[in-house]
Image (cartoon, rainbow over all chains, first blue to last red; front, side, top):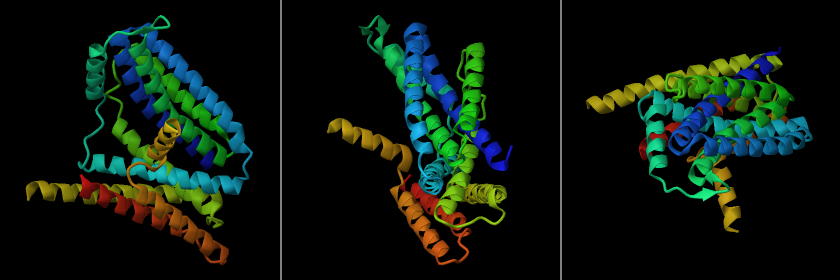
Length: 248
Length: 66
């Protein structure tokens, strides 16, 4: 497996795992407050919608010439990745609250328990919609990453395998634990995904713009190292700034 | 029309997020990289440097507005 493909599978797996942990929190809150039947129906409907989106967009993306695709995908991933990385750095340096699955679960559960019961098509509508929206919105990010990474690397199936692995793993652990996966190092994983997205974004936007990397695909490791170092440095600089602001 | 606006808003929030300036700067950096590359000059280093600068600027904007 090439460096690019290994990164592809790892990135899709991590991004999918992060999003699925978040989706699981919503589905669990919905299931415990409104019943499993409606919530699982919501999960099923959202999964079908995501599969339809992937099936419709996947072949269309592979028909675009590689350089144009890498330029567009690189630009999108870089903008998207910088968003993730900015939030992760703000969290790691104390400027933004850490993502807390337990707190989110408690909030979702309270909202779901307080909502009025409306029945449609034999389902508790609130439970269905809550699960559907949760899985669809979190899943869309996974679909976006799988399609962009996969098409630019010419390996959508490989990216899908990485993402599916995470879905299965989170589902198995979720069923076994039946609680939000608060012990998953989600903030670190989000930081890692931000680094990966930014790395691929830099790499492909440069190639798409017509420039050539010294060492071709192997330079992906160099870009990754650069992004990791500057991200960690930024965390340290901002941590110190935050500490000075607090003690001043 | 309302649905279309909502759809556009969703994708804007999804990809661009709360810092549109970062997206504009990334687009400018890609344009400069393309121009330099087509002048047969070494251009691969431009995007990493641009990403670092955009991230720093975006972080400063986020901290200022917090």
